[in-house]
Image (cartoon, rainbow, N blue to C red; front, top):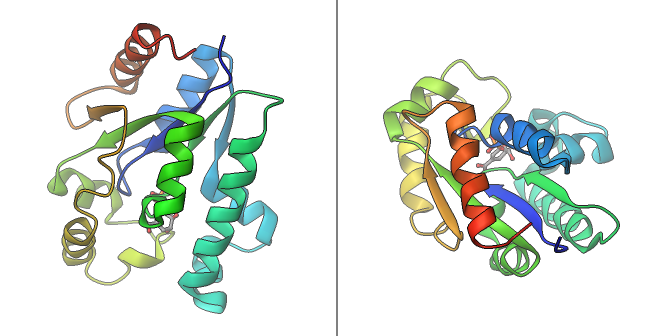
Length: 174
Ligand code: S3P
């Protein structure tokens, strides 16, 4: 067993939290949802943090909490990150160094469908479809540092995790 954590990255609505929770159960790792951890530590919801403190403050908290989790050598974690964690180059470097990085992808239409009724994602309020398109363009390439990419559109959570687990076994990552 190595000391590598497992990180799920990907755009909003690609299923990181759902997949991560089950993956952690399967592997007997602890599960951390980075957004939920930020909410817990800051004491406000994500929309409230964005509205009251701004995105820069949110990103600072995100980077700080991610770094602390990754340096924790006392337990192995599956971490479901927020879609914007890849914006910071230092975060990308840290994730690759400290973990097996798995990128979940989905087609733009799938993402729009999954997130359109969502009030919890401040960056998608208003016209969700055009915001998704704009953000996906802006973030093109930023998720590509992952060790494995899994397209989620036509797979169940179980199938996604089978692929991830097969990769981890091959890489002797856990
Ligand atoms: C964000 C994604 C969200 C959350 C915040 C910002 C982003 O997480 O961190 O709303 O910039 O892509 P999910 O990817 O879990 O929705």
